[in-house]
Length: 154
Image (tube, rainbow, N blue to C red; front, side, top):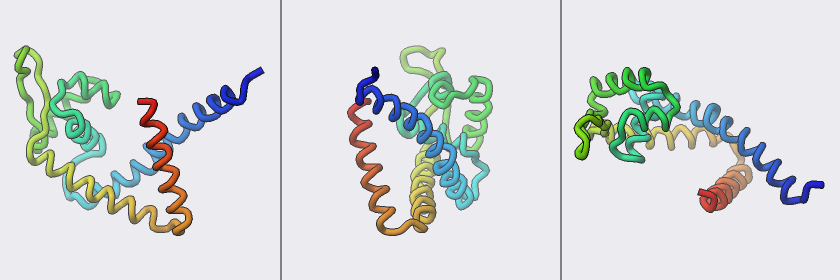
């Protein structure tokens, strides 16, 4: 017979697996598309994710970027080439091993992600504005709780 804690763990595990895609595919995708619409740039959500990853992690080899975003290396090379053409990223030779090519954000890429984040926050405000004050309060408390609890597991 399963204990109460085991039952909670099973339920929470299932819920975590269903909430993440809802947030990523539903809400985040909608917000990213809304924010990109105001950018007037020929940039895709996937390219934004590359720029975001570099913004958070710093300079990375293409393989690490492709692993982090679950994209094939061949597709990644094409995306990086396009970002280089737009002067959002640049290729840098590794300092310890010249065979390793790292990808780094340019100043233009850093500015893009800052303005994109600002547009994302505005899109989130617009999307959530249909909620009542009570719903917003509950959502805020829930997100804060999730953040605190999950921070303990990482």
